[in-house]
Image 1 (cartoon, rainbow, N blue to C red):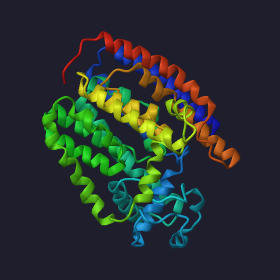
Image 2: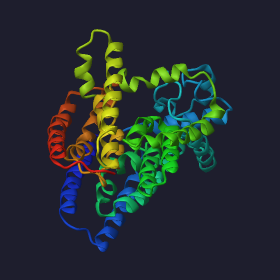
Image 3: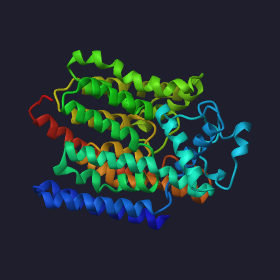
Length: 397
């Protein structure tokens, strides 16, 4: 695995070189076609490999199996007696065995569909888990199509990004689904289809909850857009109704993203050091995220910039920052310049040292000291971004 991680980082170096070349020159039509064709080749190569840095596809498979048994994934843990009949050769790879499902209802429904496909194609549990990479791959292709419409001249910043290729096509992470709907909302905003903007955000929320933090960024200073907010509720209700149950435990677990289970955090670790009670640190971070979201939404900046700034603030403040979370930021780079984010998406594979330590010791070590090799240059470059932003004249949407 060390060798694969080294290759991952080498690819990130070449990615930064390519970004520098492309952003410094106009991109011809032939070059754009080459970029897309090369991006597809990269993805086919990654698809051919089994998941290397994460076992999440095995969790997706488990939740699909649970639903095939007529059970509610929001009420069943892998460690519950009802799940024991599902034990097989791949059982050891199912992650978070003591926790119920935490994804949005759209993801849960997709896992149920994916299980039917995987079970029909193979009896091998590992091959079945491999097939749970399909949604990530398909929605990533959708992201490429949307970015071709939104920012074709800078599409390389997403298309060739190693984090995107490896985490979606290699590891199969389902973040590709809400990222697609985030980009769809940006395209709808560009076309001034306001009701569709918030409907797409609603689909994103129904997938993985995160896009809820973007509601204010998409609203901006135009409070008339608040009338479209109910559109975001419709997909959540439509997909969530079949799973209706007491999900208090699930919600409490998911708040650990902001302040609980720590995975290579940055500012959260510093904030937590100010409090003796971890819950107080959690509440403080919640408050800071709300404040950052409100302030960013009120700035006279382009929409893509506000969305990128909101997500950047969220990941810097939260207690949890897995490698694949940076795919959200990579998807916004073609539309919003940020040296700090470019560095972050390039250096973030270092966080997979947590996975390497787990394989060596058998214990998950979510916080590795090497993370500062990522955050120190990222903080410095984000500071440069901030200075550049202050010097620029405010712009409307």
